[in-house]
Image (tube, rainbow over all chains, first blue to last red):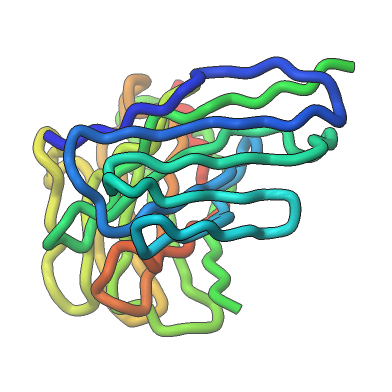
Length: 111
Length: 116
């Protein structure tokens, strides 16, 4: 079946650093979604991308819909402690009402 | 807007008992609700999709007789884990959508189930 591969699996950074993570698929997606999940909570939608090449920002977060429609990137600028969590990419399977999730990128900020 | 709640937020039960988890869309009518399960350090895995007034559609490998889903209204869906066993211990998350498209899902805060 379709899979979303996220990279890196985890990141350890210093506060204030910029962060970059990506998500790839072997098949085309028409929508890319980026979620953040805090421990013990449900995912919260950060950014939704609907068009190839689209670049969308939400505060310090910026996400891009890859031209090939098989990848997407999420960048976080000037990280702060509350950015800690798991970031999931997700996308609806074409012709379906379900979405599939990547395995997540775990962001840790070193003291 | 688009708030989804779950109750309870956590539950501990003995093996063999049944547990019901509620998922409510508080400020919108949900055409479709989804139930996910998440094991520690794993991603969300879709268990089933339910539309109000109709039977849920279960993903491959999910036992429909064990995980009973009822979607009685446009704002409430329930998941009942019947005869729970320790291997059913997990984080159960619901989401609700006001369209038939999966990309407009809003997630609840999750329910932590621990079966002793």
